[in-house]
Length: 394
Image (tube, rainbow, N blue to C red; front, side, top):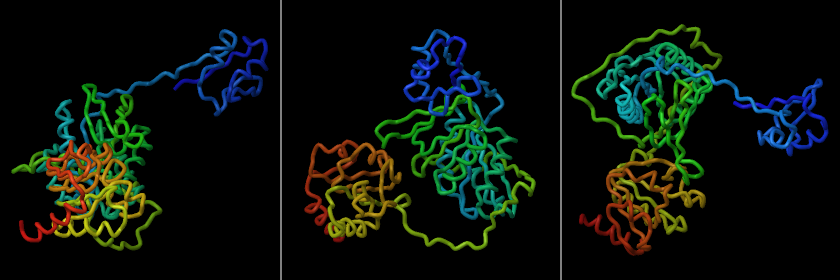
């Protein structure tokens, strides 16, 4: 970081010099001139003040030894041992990145009574699974899980850590990043690796209008969270590869003031991420009554309703059903879009679907550029005929 240093002895007219700062951020304290928190580093005092009165000094950057950090780790997100599918997707990406730089792929698995379940990870190309098994890890508590991450990082020193952007991942990753004073990029859509083992993290910014490329070349470990359904999961191998390493940690590091008194299972609901068939609605649907037509089509196909952002803002559809960079990322076997123009933000959330079928009355709608099949016409004329054909078994 840069800072301003003032040399008062080189200033003849102090009042005039203080007035140079448009933010009033130069203060005189104990006979010395200092830049306050209001300083914007505009450097006007350097450019317009007396020669040598103000200078910018860059802090010396202490470079890290990247050779001490090896391996790409995937945090295993699970619910009582049932591994979340996003973990397998991240293993596939970790394997791809690790092969570029000749590193190994690790998994960090913590919980209680999970050793046997860790075997499943070895069928997906993982070199080593580090298992922290302890009764105090049975229930997720941020402090205890963060302490385990700290112990693992200090012992193994992974170059990068990939975390699923789940409810737990979104809370745990920032805690770990803050502790190690390292970088974290959330909701990455593209990951790459440089020859210098710098993780290239790409994510949408400014409402999806630009794709920001982020790197933390002087920080280790590098952390990134990735949404479910963004990466491709690898195929399961016929035989196990790699090994499982059981790790010990002092119980004192797992003792916190937070105690779990009761766990009430949340009622399971269908989500658009797990649906094989989606019927996505756009601006062509103005009222809840209009939506009944789309719901009838979804029911006929055994699918779920999804939508674009305007319908959420109009309170016509729940926010959990929104597809796009500011919503959910989906990869169904079939998605039918009704009256959706196809903005970049929406398409980025569904363009990896197996089959995309679009219906729009505007033949120049961008959605037709990503759709595999399309019909130009009014959804209120086409959808009833489509429903009738489906019900008749055609």
